[in-house]
Image (cartoon, rainbow, N blue to C red; front, side, top):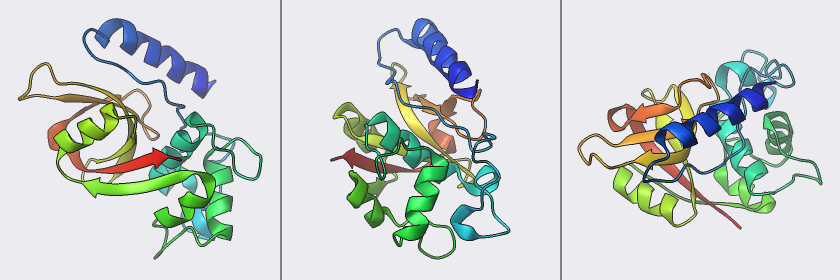
Length: 181
């Protein structure tokens, strides 16, 4: 049901806001989905995907959208979590080791704080994960409206609060850039 609601939300965004810029169709996952929300993130009994898995969910969205299965399985946050646990995919604590993603067809390009650079990468078919709300959440960039250069609005698939799809530049810390191989 969650994916259906997100698809409807994306269609509403396309109709309402899609004037003059593109909204990219990217799989939307929610951290707290009943299928994986209670699973331990990186086997940490005090952290679940629901509580701390927004970056994991964003990477799973990108892999699923770019048709990159893991062990012949469609990717969702649970599948990705298991893969990362078994393939040195976590650094300190629960930080994702981006180099482990190369084996499943996703290349980490770089992290930037300049959002104009992130927009250029987005326009050249890269995937962008935005770190928002002072590091408390991540979202996959699905489009942006830069018609007002002083007030660019970014649209995301938000794994924590799916109804919050607009992000102001002031609320974005960094952009993490990926390229599907």
